[in-house]
Length: 204
Ligand code: MN3
Image (cartoon, rainbow, N blue to C red; front, side, top):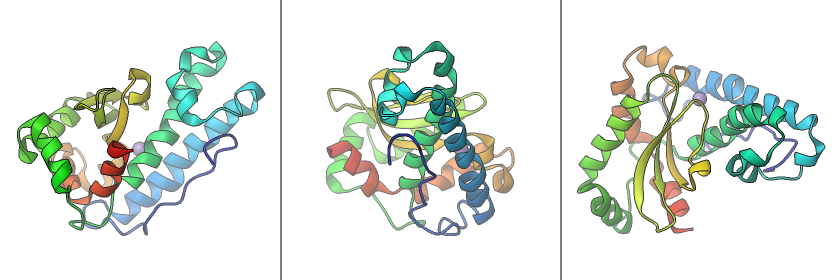
Protein backbone atom coordinates (compact mmCIF):
# COMPACT_ATOMS: atom_id res chain seq x y z
CA UNK A 1 0.00 0.00 0.00
CA UNK A 2 1.13 3.47 -0.80
CA UNK A 3 -0.25 5.08 2.33
CA UNK A 4 -0.20 4.72 6.09
CA UNK A 5 0.59 2.28 7.59
CA UNK A 6 3.52 1.68 5.28
CA UNK A 7 5.18 -1.73 5.09
CA UNK A 8 8.56 -2.80 3.80
CA UNK A 9 8.06 -3.75 0.14
CA UNK A 10 9.65 -7.07 -0.80
CA UNK A 11 12.58 -7.02 -3.18
CA UNK A 12 11.62 -8.14 -6.70
CA UNK A 13 14.55 -10.64 -6.60
CA UNK A 14 16.65 -12.60 -4.12
CA UNK A 15 19.17 -10.83 -1.88
CA UNK A 16 22.04 -12.40 -3.84
CA UNK A 17 20.56 -11.64 -7.29
CA UNK A 18 22.80 -8.62 -7.92
CA UNK A 19 26.05 -10.45 -7.05
CA UNK A 20 28.83 -9.76 -7.73
CA UNK A 21 27.96 -6.12 -8.44
CA UNK A 22 26.12 -5.59 -5.16
CA UNK A 23 26.83 -8.24 -2.55
CA UNK A 24 24.20 -10.15 -0.62
CA UNK A 25 25.22 -8.79 2.80
CA UNK A 26 24.90 -5.20 1.62
CA UNK A 27 21.49 -5.91 0.08
CA UNK A 28 20.27 -7.65 3.23
CA UNK A 29 21.38 -4.85 5.57
CA UNK A 30 20.27 -2.12 3.20
CA UNK A 31 16.79 -3.55 2.81
CA UNK A 32 16.01 -5.09 6.22
CA UNK A 33 17.76 -2.47 8.38
CA UNK A 34 18.12 0.86 6.57
CA UNK A 35 14.96 0.74 4.47
CA UNK A 36 12.98 -0.83 7.32
CA UNK A 37 13.90 2.01 9.66
CA UNK A 38 12.66 4.62 7.17
CA UNK A 39 9.36 2.71 7.06
CA UNK A 40 9.15 2.54 10.86
CA UNK A 41 10.04 6.21 11.34
CA UNK A 42 7.58 7.35 8.67
CA UNK A 43 4.79 5.39 10.35
CA UNK A 44 5.90 6.86 13.68
CA UNK A 45 5.40 10.44 12.55
CA UNK A 46 2.15 9.73 10.67
CA UNK A 47 0.77 7.96 13.74
CA UNK A 48 0.76 11.37 15.42
CA UNK A 49 -0.90 13.05 12.40
CA UNK A 50 -4.14 11.22 11.55
CA UNK A 51 -5.00 14.01 9.06
CA UNK A 52 -2.09 12.84 6.89
CA UNK A 53 -2.80 9.13 6.98
CA UNK A 54 -4.93 8.99 3.84
CA UNK A 55 -2.43 10.81 1.65
CA UNK A 56 -0.20 8.92 -0.75
CA UNK A 57 3.54 9.00 -0.28
CA UNK A 58 3.98 10.88 -3.58
CA UNK A 59 1.45 13.49 -2.45
CA UNK A 60 3.18 13.97 0.91
CA UNK A 61 6.61 14.32 -0.70
CA UNK A 62 5.48 16.61 -3.53
CA UNK A 63 3.68 18.93 -1.11
CA UNK A 64 5.91 18.91 1.96
CA UNK A 65 5.18 22.59 2.63
CA UNK A 66 1.51 21.73 3.12
CA UNK A 67 2.32 19.50 6.10
CA UNK A 68 2.35 20.65 9.73
CA UNK A 69 5.78 22.05 10.56
CA UNK A 70 6.27 19.40 13.22
CA UNK A 71 5.99 16.67 10.54
CA UNK A 72 7.88 18.21 7.62
CA UNK A 73 11.45 17.14 8.37
CA UNK A 74 10.55 13.63 9.46
CA UNK A 75 8.33 13.03 6.40
CA UNK A 76 10.93 14.52 4.09
CA UNK A 77 13.72 12.28 5.43
CA UNK A 78 11.83 9.06 6.14
CA UNK A 79 9.14 9.32 3.48
CA UNK A 80 11.89 10.13 1.00
CA UNK A 81 13.80 7.12 2.30
CA UNK A 82 10.84 4.83 1.69
CA UNK A 83 10.03 6.25 -1.76
CA UNK A 84 13.63 6.33 -3.00
CA UNK A 85 14.45 2.80 -1.88
CA UNK A 86 11.28 1.30 -3.36
CA UNK A 87 12.21 2.86 -6.68
CA UNK A 88 15.86 1.85 -6.36
CA UNK A 89 15.11 -1.86 -5.80
CA UNK A 90 12.69 -1.89 -8.72
CA UNK A 91 15.29 -0.24 -10.95
CA UNK A 92 17.76 -3.11 -10.71
CA UNK A 93 17.92 -6.67 -12.01
CA UNK A 94 20.42 -9.50 -12.48
CA UNK A 95 23.71 -8.26 -13.97
CA UNK A 96 23.85 -7.86 -17.74
CA UNK A 97 20.31 -9.01 -18.43
CA UNK A 98 18.77 -5.68 -19.46
CA UNK A 99 19.55 -2.95 -21.96
CA UNK A 100 17.67 0.09 -23.24
CA UNK A 101 15.20 -0.45 -26.07
CA UNK A 102 15.93 1.15 -29.44
CA UNK A 103 13.28 3.79 -28.76
CA UNK A 104 14.73 4.73 -25.38
CA UNK A 105 18.28 4.62 -26.68
CA UNK A 106 17.24 7.25 -29.22
CA UNK A 107 15.93 9.47 -26.41
CA UNK A 108 19.11 9.01 -24.38
CA UNK A 109 21.19 9.82 -27.44
CA UNK A 110 19.17 12.95 -28.16
CA UNK A 111 19.59 14.17 -24.59
CA UNK A 112 23.20 13.16 -23.92
CA UNK A 113 24.80 12.60 -27.39
CA UNK A 114 25.42 8.88 -26.86
CA UNK A 115 24.79 6.10 -24.38
CA UNK A 116 28.42 6.35 -23.27
CA UNK A 117 28.03 10.08 -22.73
CA UNK A 118 24.89 9.43 -20.70
CA UNK A 119 26.82 7.03 -18.45
CA UNK A 120 29.68 9.51 -18.08
CA UNK A 121 27.32 12.34 -17.18
CA UNK A 122 25.42 10.17 -14.72
CA UNK A 123 28.67 9.03 -13.12
CA UNK A 124 29.96 12.59 -12.82
CA UNK A 125 26.72 13.66 -11.15
CA UNK A 126 26.82 10.71 -8.74
CA UNK A 127 30.45 11.51 -7.85
CA UNK A 128 29.70 15.20 -7.39
CA UNK A 129 27.05 14.54 -4.74
CA UNK A 130 29.04 15.44 -1.63
CA UNK A 131 28.21 13.13 1.25
CA UNK A 132 24.95 11.21 1.28
CA UNK A 133 22.38 11.45 -1.45
CA UNK A 134 21.14 10.23 -4.80
CA UNK A 135 21.76 10.66 -8.52
CA UNK A 136 18.75 10.51 -10.82
CA UNK A 137 17.72 10.27 -14.41
CA UNK A 138 14.51 12.30 -14.53
CA UNK A 139 12.02 13.64 -17.02
CA UNK A 140 10.50 17.08 -16.87
CA UNK A 141 6.97 18.18 -17.78
CA UNK A 142 7.98 18.34 -21.46
CA UNK A 143 9.31 14.75 -21.33
CA UNK A 144 12.90 16.01 -21.57
CA UNK A 145 15.50 13.80 -19.93
CA UNK A 146 18.08 15.17 -17.54
CA UNK A 147 20.29 14.16 -14.63
CA UNK A 148 19.96 15.68 -11.18
CA UNK A 149 21.25 14.92 -7.70
CA UNK A 150 19.49 15.23 -4.37
CA UNK A 151 20.97 15.37 -0.87
CA UNK A 152 20.07 12.97 1.92
CA UNK A 153 16.68 11.38 1.12
CA UNK A 154 15.25 14.24 -0.92
CA UNK A 155 13.34 13.22 -4.05
CA UNK A 156 12.98 14.92 -7.45
CA UNK A 157 9.19 15.04 -6.87
CA UNK A 158 9.46 18.35 -5.04
CA UNK A 159 11.25 19.81 -8.07
CA UNK A 160 8.33 18.88 -10.33
CA UNK A 161 10.40 16.14 -11.97
CA UNK A 162 9.45 12.51 -12.60
CA UNK A 163 12.09 10.14 -11.23
CA UNK A 164 13.05 7.45 -13.74
CA UNK A 165 16.28 5.94 -12.44
CA UNK A 166 17.79 6.45 -8.97
CA UNK A 167 21.25 5.60 -7.72
CA UNK A 168 21.82 5.47 -3.98
CA UNK A 169 25.25 6.97 -3.21
CA UNK A 170 24.96 6.79 0.57
CA UNK A 171 27.96 4.86 1.87
CA UNK A 172 25.61 2.21 3.30
CA UNK A 173 24.82 1.29 -0.32
CA UNK A 174 28.35 0.25 -1.22
CA UNK A 175 30.84 0.54 1.63
CA UNK A 176 31.12 -3.15 2.59
CA UNK A 177 32.24 -4.15 -0.88
CA UNK A 178 33.70 -0.98 -2.36
CA UNK A 179 34.82 0.97 0.75
CA UNK A 180 35.76 4.46 -0.49
CA UNK A 181 35.66 3.47 -4.18
CA UNK A 182 32.44 5.17 -5.21
CA UNK A 183 33.61 5.45 -8.86
CA UNK A 184 33.97 1.66 -9.13
CA UNK A 185 30.56 1.11 -7.51
CA UNK A 186 28.98 3.43 -10.07
CA UNK A 187 30.78 1.86 -13.05
CA UNK A 188 29.65 -1.60 -11.99
CA UNK A 189 26.13 -0.53 -11.12
CA UNK A 190 25.36 0.26 -14.78
CA UNK A 191 25.32 -3.52 -15.31
CA UNK A 192 22.34 -4.06 -12.99
CA UNK A 193 20.01 -1.34 -14.28
CA UNK A 194 16.55 -2.65 -15.11
CA UNK A 195 15.91 -0.61 -18.25
CA UNK A 196 12.42 -2.00 -18.73
CA UNK A 197 11.41 -0.53 -15.38
CA UNK A 198 12.99 2.83 -16.27
CA UNK A 199 11.23 2.95 -19.63
CA UNK A 200 7.85 2.04 -18.15
CA UNK A 201 8.15 5.11 -15.91
CA UNK A 202 9.10 7.28 -18.85
CA UNK A 203 6.30 6.16 -21.18
CA UNK A 204 3.61 6.10 -18.48
MN1 MN3 B 1 20.05 3.59 0.97
